Image 1 (cartoon, one colour):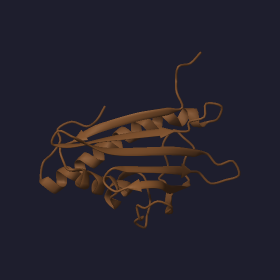
Image 2 (cartoon, one colour):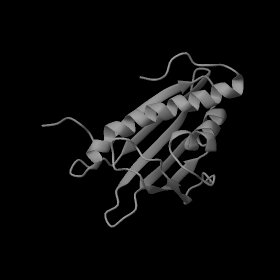
Image 3 (cartoon, helix red, strand yellow):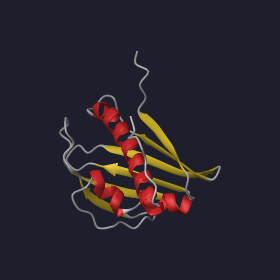
Image 4 (cartoon, one colour):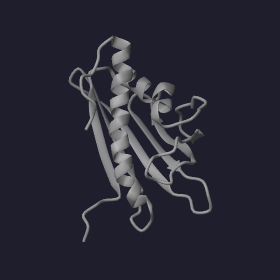
Length: 156
């Protein structure tokens, strides 16, 4: 019996305020860095949805337009959303990002669920988790660019 779950959680500490971390996490620069071909900047508010044209992901057949919909938004604290693929048999992932004060900065915790193991989504789970580690790294790069500091090592 496998102990693999249908969700994963990754997080990172940022030595910046929740407001700055929130801005970087929802910036056009972050989304266009690795994920999207083009994007009109979305409004981060409950009920708003937008389509992202993904760049092809090597090693997968995932090269689609996905729809992201914000379900719950508390600025600088919480964003809950879904990501849905197009087609006759769409898949849907659920995301939850929480921004929490920690020491002199912010801890961003990202949880994704919906990786149904009876479908091909089980193969995407590991890729998605590694991608989220990269997203957290990119957020740090954006924040560092604002303050003029640099990182010395990429994430593993």
